[in-house]
Length: 99
Image (cartoon, rainbow, N blue to C red; front, top):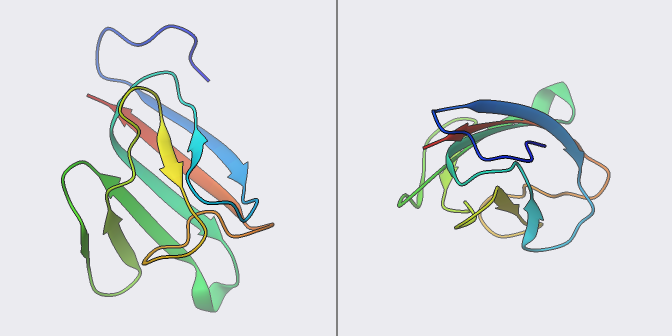
């Protein structure tokens, strides 16, 4: 996690393990413009998830686009709904991009 917000655009990466909760905040140290998640599940159900401001559209295939960016620091993940991004015991890799 970055302790000082970037003064220019930045990309930060990390990993979290899902805990099955809703509206869990993943802290990255700055407001995100976009976040890319990759769920490490079985080969048949691997999923890329793209989180982007002001968008709430599901695209075809394995790419989901939803609005779950936090207003001031990081992004929110949930278990359930259109996109499960916090499934219990699933490991997620993420790339957060600053504005």
